[in-house]
Image (tube, rainbow, N blue to C red; front, side):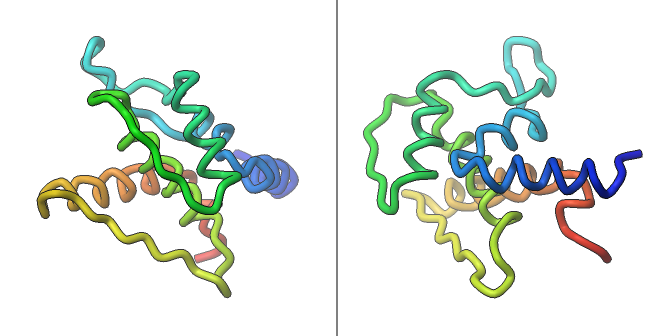
Length: 125
């Protein structure tokens, strides 16, 4: 069992890393189609660049090839942002896709990442 001191240190690490790379790589898993199972989410260098840009920039526009993992990485980043948001300044996420199904898939990915986090991230019940 993790004690309150360890929880505090982990929360500080996650909160202070504005790129959210630490939190993504330590708490999230993703499906690896080559292994056909969930594996720890270890970001590729370009995905880390995206997280750094999202964490430091106010507005980001990017061009990307297909199948670069940008949707999954963005979903993981947003899940972190939503969980770590100040209750007095909540975050609103607008999911837009070229079809309703794609927008819903994006929201589902965010929800699935949030579900992977330990209960202590959400405070007392």
